[in-house]
Length: 71
Image 1 (tube, rainbow, N blue to C red):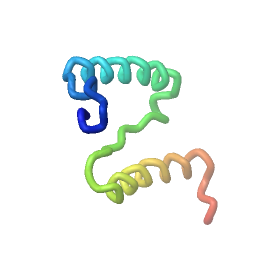
Image 2 (image 1 turned 90 degrees about the horizontal axis):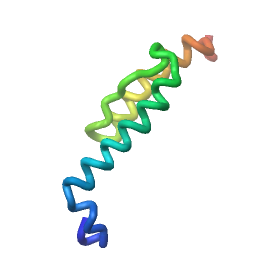
Image 3 (image 1 turned 90 degrees about the vertical axis):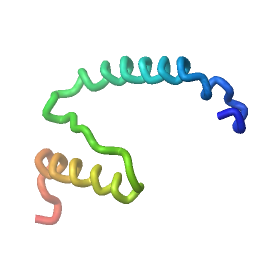
């Protein structure tokens, strides 16, 4: 943080506040959608693993909504 000339990013209170704002604002967006359309995806690990987690969630949801384009 300090190397990149962002000393505020080294302050734990600032980071905690940013997370609070993030969660408060995204909760409003999530509340807008039908709960059956909102899914949690694990976004930790290697990029390929994260992509796999996203696809394993999105593909069935999309097929349920749009049908299977390959069928």
